[in-house]
Image 1 (tube, one colour):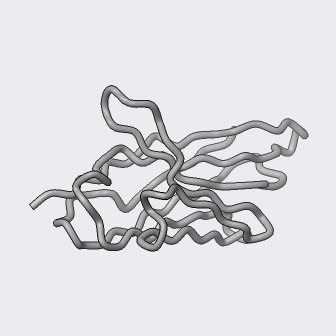
Image 2 (cartoon, one colour):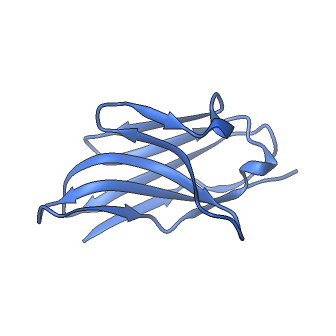
Length: 120
């Protein structure tokens, strides 16, 4: 069993900041990559940022320069620091992890999602 649990969402004014965290736990052997996606009603889930075990990061163009993804490999956690938030950043944010379990099965796991609302 593998679980991803997100925290840190909420309501913030435009220009404000939020920090999302995600912790992976369970029968994990190794994690290749962890990332954040977001989804608004009626639209497809889209990539926000991801980070692989070696430290390489990738960001959606819409968040470059405003969001920073970081990871603690020892703790199996990933964080997303979101600055200069805009109303269009409002969405449910999902954590994901591409990992191998102790049963040697590799798969992608998702968290339950956390709501981020940017509004005055």
